[in-house]
Image 1 (cartoon, rainbow, N blue to C red):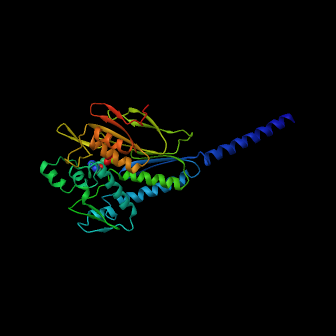
Image 2: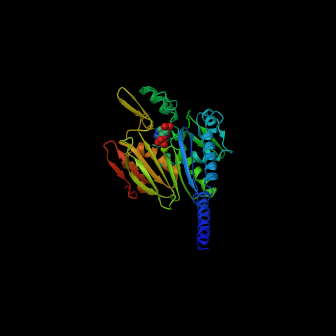
Image 3: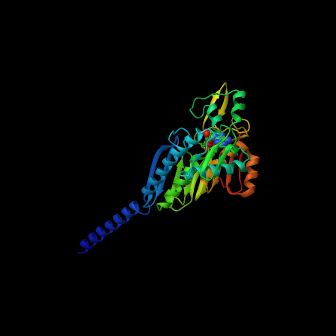
Length: 330
Ligand code: AMP
Ligand code: MG
């Protein structure tokens, strides 16, 4: 009798344990990860909870939709249409994202006195970064192309965008950040509370990790393939890095990288090799990381002091590490 009691108890305990295990894995703590290719880069999203799979699917749909809209090479997309319209106004009445993104980009262009400029496209192309056919343009060509680079050439109408003076849009420095914000919104709308979104290095840490603790993000050491500078702990924050070690080519022993100074037309050489921006807004963090790389440490600090709506981690050419006051790198 006693033995039977014990075995019944054991069976019940096993069932209870099994139910708890299944509930845990199919419910509250369910983990779901997807890795995919979009916007010319590898992306991955990990989410927890019962809505993890649905949330990731919705986020992925959003990213793909934005990829089509914002790509300069998609002939059926609105960006391509704006870029090939000459001086004509192009209706964006059905494209609220494009208008919103341009408005946000222009705000950052003004804030950074043009260090960030989404009309940099013709120069990025001339240096060969668009098609990966690298080339060092001569001074004359750079001077000619610089005439097209000016964010003031973008005219925003009620429902339209017009590009003056042969300007071209290039969302390369802001699109992934915008897509990360959209992905996070899709995840939240689906009911996801914990997720890590990594769109080719544009990271957004939503909520907490699986254990309910802040997400720990390693910040890459620009001087090493494997090492990190340290770790930061974040929740509901975007962490975005721009560096000259990501995309570059070398010619005659000189290195040329993909972040250009709209003032000179040459790869930005402000003394920084890496910039990480931490902010609750991923679009802002993405644009600001590119802008800070162009501006250098001093101007970045000046802008930081204005609003303190982001934090920064900078690495200089001399290997110096500079962080804003809200950063705790461990
Ligand atoms: P990111 O990796 O976010 O810093 O963005 C770099 C990409 O943005 C480049 O590959 C170019 O397509 C574009 N870009 C380069 N320089 C600038 C700039 N000064 N302002 C805006 N976009 C830029
Ligand atoms: Mg950027």
